[in-house]
Image 1: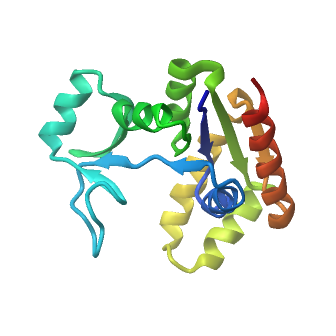
Image 2: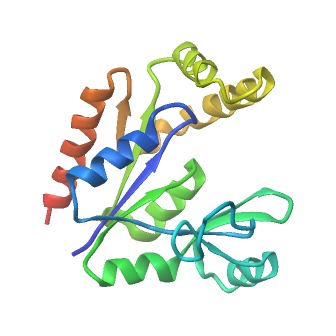
Image 3: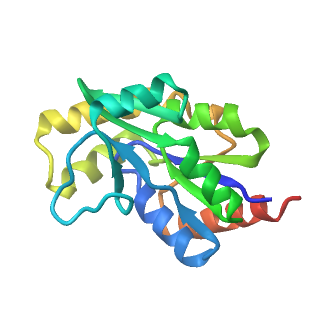
Length: 188
């Protein structure tokens, strides 16, 4: 039976790097394409990076219960995971990877239960996280502060996850993520 692996982490924790490594090491994993109401950027294509839907269509689908999780990030700007996308991949025998926020991860766990593994990736400390975000050089100090405040909120959810991985050494965290996912996939 196919399963779901749900990743969640504060910005700057290394989640995307760990997901990419896990997918490289475990080729049976497939990433679920999310839906959004934002317009495509650059060369993004419908059904590849995202399913690009109108705000009205997303609202209608939310009302119809077609999303397993969704969030209105800004007024009229939605992101979410279509149940049809996840169920299609599971029916094809694929193990599905989701990259979600803490509330989305909890919703998926409620729906799929033991068929879903939730993994929370965390930085070694808030100070280290601040250093990583600053060293990226992509955000203004006030944006970094907002990300730190959001991280503190997200960290309060960590005990609710099936697995927690502290990313203080990338090579070790990569090995640990692959090991834990493989153990989960091997369970009947």
